[in-house]
Length: 86
Image (cartoon, rainbow, N blue to C red; front, side, top):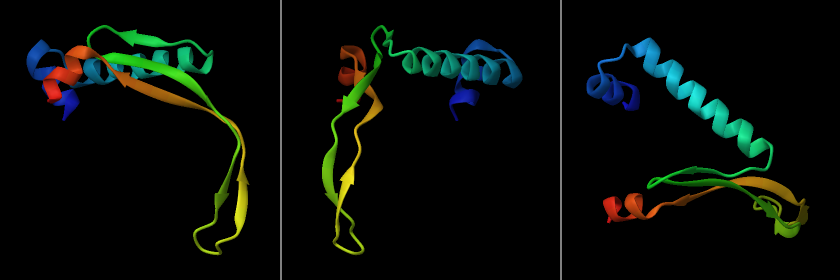
């Protein structure tokens, strides 16, 4: 759906649009893996967050398990996107 919408608005080929989107996602992923944040003005910010270790419960056995600390990607919507969705 996104590829077709971009194709219609830009008159680029499907192959070009897919390549552009793939490149953008690769670059966002590469920057996040380095611990950097990526801001798309008006749309939002992708950043890396550290999640502390915590205790959880296995829903099948009800046994307590330890969930390890991990680094996770986060997205914060920008003002323009928030207003458009309201």
